[in-house]
Length: 564
Image (cartoon, rainbow, N blue to C red; front, side):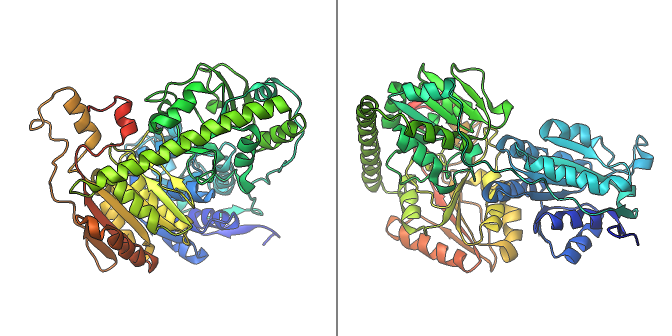
């Protein structure tokens, strides 16, 4: 054999060799009939988390990628397997998750003949991914896989789709030395040329820093907090940016937009600058509750598509981390007494707002204590009190589980939320991927019963080998958001039964699953602790909590998106 040349009996062995060379150790998915892939994975020592539903497989891979910052791999069959996974592809794209989708395909030699599960899968997936490609010849298997890895990791990162047709899959593959992903050039301290963005920062006296999901894994050494401190800015995150910054920091004021409490909204209404870091200024941030101030907005994003044209102010194309380092360095050189006085006044207002938010949260707990059933703030307080230092909160985006966006729950190890697409069941399935990415962290999935039902089969299947997740399931018998809109329009609840309050919660059982229905306030903390202990031993815990229809976050009610 020529030096450096390798021969593979089939395409999957070649693909897996490339994955291994690039540090991949875990895959998620539901393969098609071609189980040769499993043999290739076993031979290379890679693990597959088997799934029952292709959407859930994509959600798991997305959760893994978002939590770890590493490439996730999802394997699929062909035809309807690909269309079924499309919702997960959409979510991965909107979240910027680096996911490589490996799919089977109808044979190249019989394309157009109407063969079994034949579909133009590239046409289906192309609008949902950064790159979609069908490998047409065995010689192209390895280069195409390397290209897919490169494009998935970016920047900007996102999902890619690679299809291996059946006749290519079974052919011998001959390849030269394997390529790995390109090396990233790290520039940690770059002097910035004075420009509009820096001048705007220097002129601000009441700034707000808004941290988007693109700052995930880019806040090493607290560069965001140091910049906010240096600027004297109120520090907010978008929903997807949560977990990026220290939520105990004295400038942190919570999640912005629809999820902001009243005191935080007052800060927004009186700020004179918004600095948006690696976010997209999505609708739930700029509308839905918090009036967006008519001020200059400085946007920084490495992805041109993430720079909105809807707001006045400088737009910076580049790595937000590098921008913060450069701006902080420049600001250190021109600190003035006048600026210090203005900054002190603004940080005092931030402290007052934070105190007001704390008082409101305590008042909510006092009010909840007077009611007979367990209220969601009490549940979140118990989860927060029992959580270890390193824990990840995985969320859905339903009416009542949005309490976790609004009510203080201090995220010590990360937060994974759905994108603006908010597909049902994302958080329920993604939690399994998150746990694989962070095995030493506690992982709590805070979800509704509709989401739980969408992922229940995969939760049960994953429990024996891939457990460790605590599922806290809010049970209102259906879809609370839709029922709230039904009530707002005065539609008949019997004719349109989106929820069935009082309906028994869905049951899930098994030796690897700790299942409880929580109804007793007095035993709430003990029940949560018992569930956490079970998870620490590798099991899956499911706590079902019946909730009252009126138990919705005040900020959601204040936004007038649900009836009061």
